Image (cartoon, rainbow, N blue to C red; front, side, top):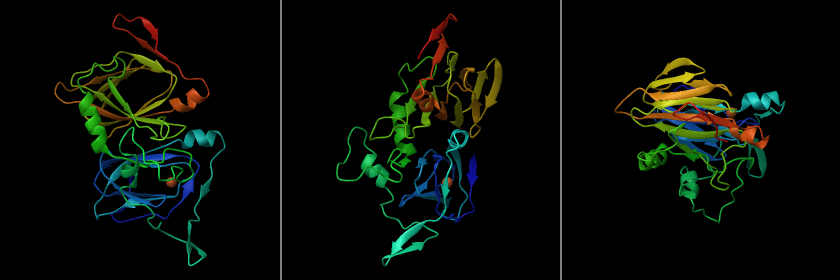
Length: 279
Ligand SMILES: [Fe+2]
């Protein structure tokens, strides 16, 4: 889904069993308060609202902002495991009081301060936040991702995927949610990937650049802010349409769910067209 709130609109807190992320597309004032951390985010920043974590969405700063939302709702619904809670309360003078806005309990840069340095983690905080069911790092800033992409742009990368960087839970090294893995995929100028097929379903949102994908033999052209849905089992190849600019996709895959059920598989073709089992 794409979300646009009115300028300076903030919705009341709620929580639910489906996990969600927001990825900033336009404007600097996207807002999500999550478990007492007030996060304002802009293009390329990813914010988590995990399973059972209180959150409220909106826009601040008087200007419109748009973000892309990705949820595991269809899976959770299929499993009959959806529950919502809209009654947000805080203790005020020893009494439980219902509130329309979460009071900030963490500094607004908490996620970056505690988890922002890969491989180094402060010991003095409780890493079980919200429902304790996902990554406790709730914000992944674009600035860091962009620096990592830049540092790796000259590697050969993967012939079927180009350069892919996963978002990980800093406490486990695994995906941020147990159901969905999120990543950023870069195709260098002129890059064309070899055909690949996997059991997982993918959602790819071109964040920068333009080009086309061939999905089961059919060509789909795409541009910035489009979303491409690639059903599990499809053969797919991507082509960067520019010889001077990279393509950056924001991606989501249900591979973690399939891996937990031992259903995940991946195949590819090499330059000669031979079929390869990759995973
Ligand atoms: Fe929600």
